[in-house]
Image 1: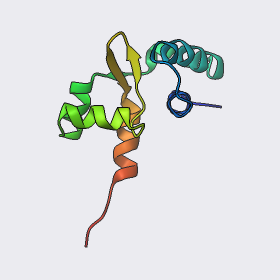
Image 2: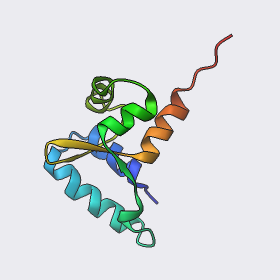
Image 3: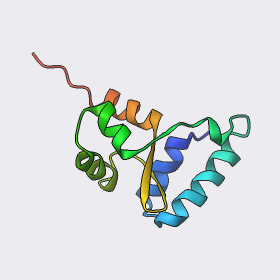
Image 4: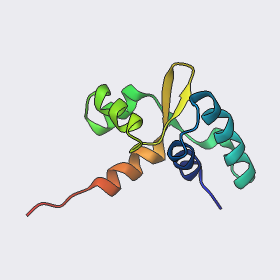
Length: 97
């Protein structure tokens, strides 16, 4: 069963149009997990993601445009699933000596 993050990543990797990403994302989530409402997914703005990660907004935009951080385009702005931010940080964690 696909999660919302897997759907977003798949759409970003296939190069879907910005307007189509939102429409396909909703269908993907609703069709793969009918027991979980799409409204339960918490989306963050670019500014909120930057605050959580303690980086600049430009860094977040680079991550989104580079496909490293999945996002949904809403109008002219991006929304990032909160879980995607936590997953990115967990997967990027590096231990030093």
